[in-house]
Length: 100
Image 1 (cartoon, one colour):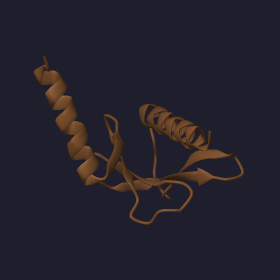
Image 2 (cartoon, rainbow, N blue to C red):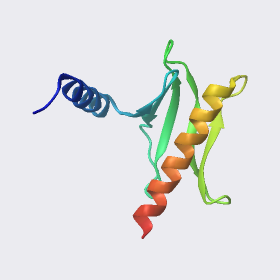
Image 3 (tube, rainbow, N blue to C red):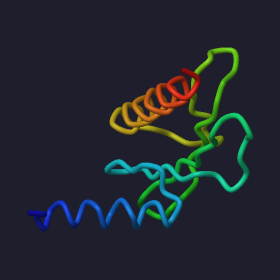
C-alpha cells in the first residue's frame, strides 16, 4: 500500500521534472539550462529565495568532472558550498556511469 508521504514525494519529483528542476536543496535549485552541450549537461544554479541566478554547473574538461562556475560578485556560505560540491560529485558520477 502506498503511503501519503510516498505519494507526496512522487508528486514533487514529477512537478520538478515538468518545471526543469534537476535537483534542489534547502537554499538552491539546480535547473537544466535552456542551451545544452551535446555531450554533457549544463545546469543553472538558482537561489530558492528570489530565483537569482548564482552561476552554472558544467563539465570542466581539464578536470574531467563537473564544476561550479559562479557569477561575479556572488558570495556563498558553507552549507551552499557543500550542496554545490555534492551536486557536482553526483553529476560527475552520473556522467561517468553513462560512459561504462
